[in-house]
Amino acid sequence: MGKSAQCGLHIWLPDAMEGPTPVSALIHAATLVVAGVFLIIRCSILFEYSDTTLTIVSIMGALTAFFAASVGLFQNDLKRVIAYSTCSQLGYMIFITGLSHYSVSLFHVANHAVFKALLFLSAGCVIHGLSDEQDLRRMGGLLHILPVSYIMILIGSLALIGTPFLTGFYSKDCILELAVAKHTTVGN
Image (tube, rainbow, N blue to C red; front, side):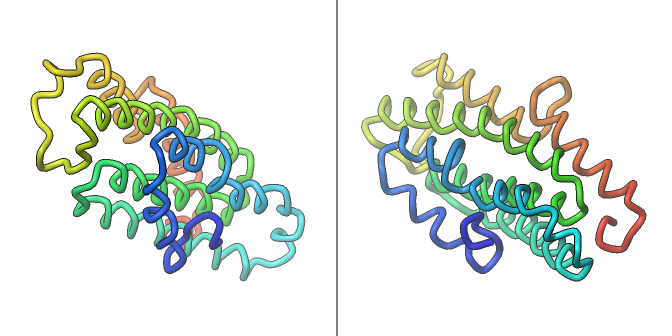
């Protein structure tokens, strides 16, 4: 759970944003943070032997999804906002593994990798285009300055929030549907 930056163990992930943006894209999208989720998926046979463990995993995932999204609302650094949204998405992935839907978690891992890489690489273009400025309060009018980067961040953000017919919609909607369809206290 520490590798996946779950609640209480999430501090390292936003602090990893000090490196170059392409490195951040690889850390968040493809390799490092999803390793914990992938490990839980691979060890699913062991998790299935304990309902208590599955309940703890689901509760921690749900708390992380809510907590990280809330913290991300109050950040001013562009890369930290994206980092906290990664924590929130990891919470979704962990949550659904606790409900024993491992394939859906892996589906969200793959979708997350695509739109998170798009967001980080586009953020890198914006930061570079604005002379290494990362403070969101000092950004504005990007549509006129960097139109392609603006459109890419818009597409990545829409996928991240689950806009219909974009990649995030299919995995996040499936996670929420399966949670409600479970008809348990944890699922609800």
